[in-house]
Image (cartoon, rainbow, N blue to C red; front, side):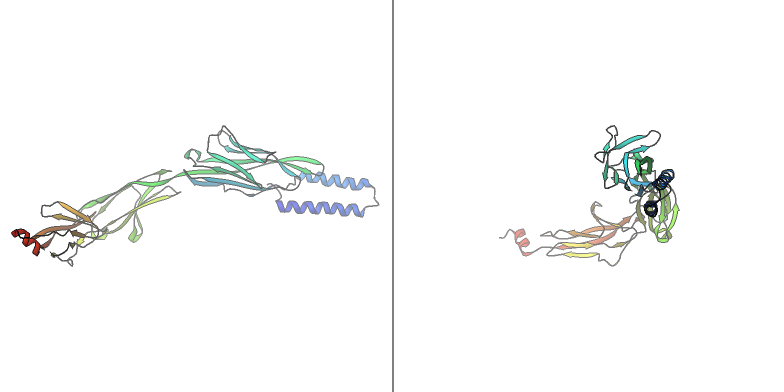
Length: 355
């Protein structure tokens, strides 16, 4: 609203008409002509200064931001004074070509969606609040201005005039960044180099930044980063894809795996299955790989445990090998021996043919 706000408008109206009432009461014995002239003068002043009380009391910000595929609501709320009423209103997309989204049916006091508008939207009017709702909003609505226009009829004394009001917000629709490719476990020996890759999608196109978490430093503003595998390079590295509206993060840690010497290397199977253990440390947590005497991989895990099922009627030694590997490298094989002695009484009887 230009000029006076709603509260000042009401105060001015009250003061003026009270002064008029007092003046007329004090001039009861004066000719009616003087009172009529004063009434006309005040009326002309009201009309010439354009005193009206319409006001937006709630508007969207100049810039409305939302994610593609989401629902979004844009709301306006206004206030009218006695003697004011809407005579027309529309909601539209203001751009190179103005597209009407909805117009108000004054008699029903509701907005009707333009049948030619192809967006998934609806307009709601309730208690002087107008809401424009978009469903599963699309990227093609980005950077467009959405406005409401209202024409208000104003009655002052015996005169009528109209005023027009407009309120807009610019809509930004973004696509959330998504990291679609990143480095996986790469076996490299200590002292070599490793390339960490990170690619992402999004709209606007996201920028890629690699950081090292341990010292909170930015290493490169590129999707590709080369790391020399040394003790000083160990730590957590994060790829951040950011397009100023949202971001996505993927982290990877680098460190050298090391097998522990605390786990036993000899086990015995007599009455039950046996769980053999291979412990390792490293950044990232290494994978423990078990192979048999023939070199075939028989088990992989992070905890390093491998359970050998119980076998009856055996008297022999089984040999297994474990090793740890991660993105930084792999350890030498560690030999684990399992002595199996399950020659129970019934096994001896079976072997001699006795029942």
